Structures are given as structure tokens and as C-alpha cells.
Image (tube, rainbow over the protein chains, first blue to last red):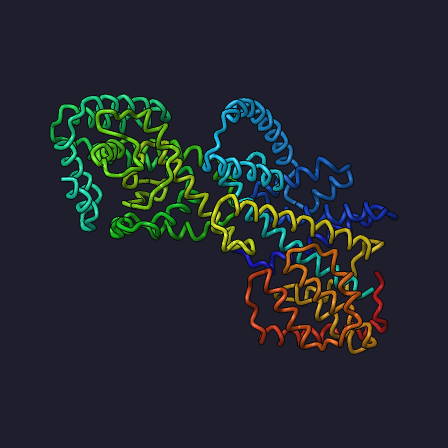
Length: 179
Length: 418
């Protein structure tokens, strides 16, 4: 397990690099734009640290690429370095096909759900299923995973988020102290 | 008669083959159901049909041999068994190159550790060491390959169990002791019923054997009183994998130690992930306000990168030199912010409160540096669940204090350009 501190340091470097690249392109940004740029570069930096090994990182990068305009596209590409854009487009296609599959499966499932009983075990199952659905919506790219890999992705995602929060917080505090 | 077999099975001296031979002999004496065997052979052919290509033909042939033997009730399972196993072995080799290594070995590590009556000799002989090494080196992040491998693995599980299954089904049929087994009597056994009724079973912990044959895929043996068909076995493997990962999550998410159910755990995980995401949003907004031109100070960066260990140490160091130069009143603010930030994090709340609390606390009594540092360590170790030894930390603090201090002095005004 790679050490959390080296993770944080790598994240910080990539993130600062991304922010500086944002900065060079534009002169005056509104506060919301700034916030978005910061958040975007932070997320992409976090995701790029995984080098495409986890599903959530790929999905995050794909989302960033989809949302952004050309500038951000370049930014993301530079940050991730590898040549992820190819895999990102593959991801898009995969996601589209999976969506179609899910839609077709969902119809069948709704019919079964109509016959739900009131036994405690089925209530528990329903709860678990509902919460799994919520978790899938939280984790980027989570809708297309089965349960076991979802939990793994959650683990990795939580670790990355934690590192991200720690670094951001310390940077925020440091920059506050200096100003 | 019913007692003899379990005792034999638990004997740790016999090898797998010997044990199975003994079992088969015992079974053929016991069972009288022609019906059952017919269905078995039917199932096997359907299952072998389910397999990929002609690879399983060998094993399929072995199976039909076995079932035929069973039907005629001749005591010739051994050659059948022996022919089946080596063929399976060959097939394993073929499939082994698929790079299963990571996924199944992860579970196998767990499976080995869990067995109670499983003869450790057998498991060790099979080469648990490479398995364990693989298991230990497995990272959480390699989920991608595993997804595709999982499907294949489930198929392979069913493949591999073809030979082993008939024996266990016969055991199952004869052991009518457990209530969990919804197979009522040997005469009414139907494989299709098994699949329906037992797929929803919760596993009891009368653990017999969960054995590892090869590091490439899992050989799961049915536990006592449980379903033995491939679907439920595969599903049990899946369930165990999930529960194992939930245990990891329990360690990661704070406050989950007391919660045992899946639903409760999921709830905590959801709350935690949501709060982390909200914190990221808030912090990025905060950074946007603090930093109108989006450049981050090089000195700031430089001081940060001094840190060989955690970056969380930075705030105290950044503050420490300034405290000697600023007026005492201004010192409180940054310390309080850090402290209150820590406190809030401990409570898993939003960082939004920190500025309010800081304002409230500026009127309070002075906080000395050692106190603040102490608070800081406890605060930051709490949520992170790491125990940082205070002694080396303080030594580092001293070093960094010196470096940062010299930097800030050279800058000659403590307001860095932002």
C-alpha cells in the first residue's frame, strides 16, 4: 500500500501544476470559475495518480474531458500525460453501451419488484439495494460496476478523497496565514 | 455410518485423492437413488455443454464415466476419478495463463485462513505460499481486470466443480441432519430445486473444508449442510468476497466498528463519502476566495515540500515563525482555525464552522505553541487513524521551524504576495 504522504505530495505537485496552467491561459476569472478550475484540477490530479488502474479514476477523467472546452481538454491531457484521451473515448462508448444494457434489464427488474413481500429479510435486502444504488451514484463511474468491485472502488476512492481533503485544507490554511 | 465419513474427512493425514476415494466408496454403498444419478448425469452434460469449446471434453468424459459408474453401482470410481483429475489439471494449466492470479488468489488467501478442519498439510502442499504472496501483493486498485476475470472465474468454478460435485451431492443427499438444507429427502432431490431453494441460503458456519487446489482459480468445497450446486457455491464465494471487502471498509471509515449489518455499513460509507466530497467543494471555494489570482506562492510550496512526512504538519510550522513576529492577538486566529478545523473534522462536520469558531475563540486565553502542536497531532491522528509518535514529530517540527523561519525572515515582510 503506497504511503499516504507520498500520495499527498504527488497530488499536490500535479494539482499546483494544473492550477498554474489554468492561470496562464486566462487573466481574470470570476470566483465561481476559479473554484471550478481548482476543483477540476484537483480531481483530475487525484485521478491521474491512479494511472487508469481504477474505474473511478477513468470515469472522472472522462467526465472532465466531456465537460470542458478545448483548454480544459489540453489541461487534462497534460496532467494525465499518458494518452488517456483514447481510453477516455473507449470509456464513453463503453458507458453508452452499458447504459443501454442497464435500461433493458431495468424493465424486467421492475416487474419483479412489484411482488415484494414484507418479510424482514426482504426489507433488509431492499434497504441494501437502495443504498447500493445511492453509493453507485456517488462514486464516479459507479453505475457500471457489480457489487464487489463497487466496494473496492469505494475503498480506493475514499483514500484518494481523504488525501485530497488533507492537502487542500493545509494549503488553504497556509495561504490564509500568509495573506 | 453417517459418523464415519465426517471423521474420515477431518483426518488430516489423507491426501485429497485418498479422501475422495474413500468418500466415493462410502457413497456407493449408501445411496440407492437411480433417479438422482440420472439427473446428475443430465446436469453434467448440460454443464459441460455450458463450458468453453472442447477444453472440457476430457473432464466431461470423465464425469459421464463417473456417473455411469454410480448408476451401475460398481466400485470403479477411482480410475474415473483419476482420469478426471489430471484432465482437470491440464485444463487448469491452460486457463492459468489468463492471469487470474490477482482476483482468485485474494480470496484464496482468505479461504485458507478461514478453514477450521481443512488439513493445512493439503493446503500447504498445494502451494499456498505463492498464493499468499499474490494475495498480499494485491492492491485494491486492480479492479478492472478482475471484473472480466470474474465472469470467467464463475464459469471455471462451475467447470471445476463438475467432478467434485457429484460426490458432494451424494453426501448431501445422505446427510439429512441440517435444517438449512431444504432437500427434504433423497427421493425428492431435484437439482433444479436445489438451485432455487439454496441460492438464498445464508451460510452456516459448520465449516468443513474450503480448499485451494491451484492458485489460478478457486476450488470451493460445500460446507456441511449447504447447497452444493455450482450456482450457490459461486454465489457464496461472491458473498464472502464482498463481506471481506466490507471489513476493510470498516477499518477505513471512522465509527463503523460497532455496526455489523451490511445496510448500516453502507449507510455510514455513503455519509462519509458525501461529507468528503462536500469538504472538497468547500475547500476549493475557500481557496478560490483566498487566492484571487490563482497563483500559489513558491515559498509556500517550497516550505511544503520540505516535509518528508505528512503535509499536515505544515500549518503549525507555517504559523510558528510568524508567531514570534506578529502581535500576540493575531497569533490566536490561525491556531484557533487549525484547532477548530481539526475539531470539526473529528466530528465529521463541515469546515464551514471553522471561521465562526475562530472568531469566537480569539477572545480566549493565549494558546502556547506546545499546546497547539499537541492538539494538532491529536486532531490529525484521530481522523486518519495513524499513530504518529510525538517525539520524532517534534524533532522534525524543530528542523522545519528553523528552515521556514529563515525563509520568512529573508522575505523581510511576512505578507507574501498572493
